[in-house]
Amino acid sequence: MDELELLKKDWKKQEGSFHQISEKEIYGMLHKGSSSIVKWIMIISVLELLLWLSISFLTADDQYFKTLELYHLDTFMPIMSIISYGVILFFIFLFFKNYKAINTTDNVKQLMQNILKTRKTVKYYVWYNLGITAISMIIVFIFQFLYDPSINKMIDNASSNIDPKTFYCIMLLVYAVVIVVFIGLIWLFYRLLYGILMRRLQKNYDELKKIDY
Image (cartoon, rainbow, N blue to C red; front, side, top):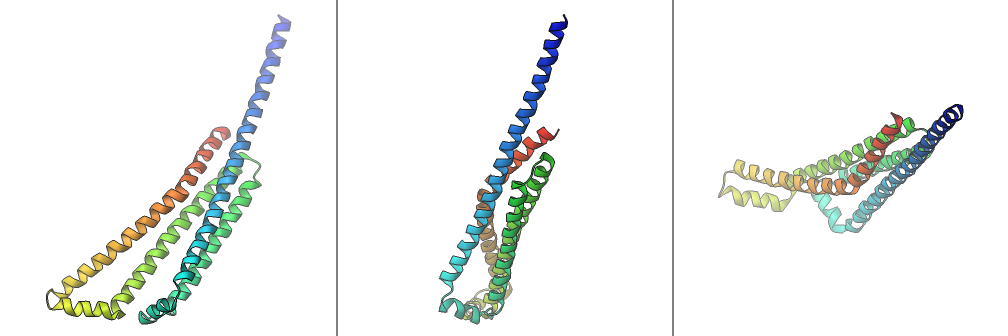
């Protein structure tokens, strides 16, 4: 009986050892996976910035600057672009900090906190881009409506056939639809691009919560 009890105790010790090793292995995989996801978030944000810079560079011809001057936006839009790119660079810096923090984390609770922080940063980044795009489009449409000769000519021609207030309402409705559709497409792009990574990060967080408890 004594030998049997000793064997049972020895087996229980081994079971505890295997359980601890298993948790460490799971944590290691989740840690590595989370670090890789945040690295990809940072890489994608850098590629996105380069894409917008390339588009701006390729479209910034003489006609573009003449249009800005016509709309009285030749000073405002460049300043707004510089501020916007500066904010995006700041977000990229935050993504880099999140990556470094997750990469050097050595405990479950801290890794969970860093994952939550990363998710918040991505969320703010997406909302900022959607917001600044909507604001830019609204400003351009307003100044186009005020200063574009072709728009003014259209208003004069329409005034003879339709009530001016009705025409303005129609124009505003068209502008609103264009803005909503364009912002919606960008939102879908972000949801597809960052949504996949965010779901994987959330899955890692849920697994870490099981280990923590």
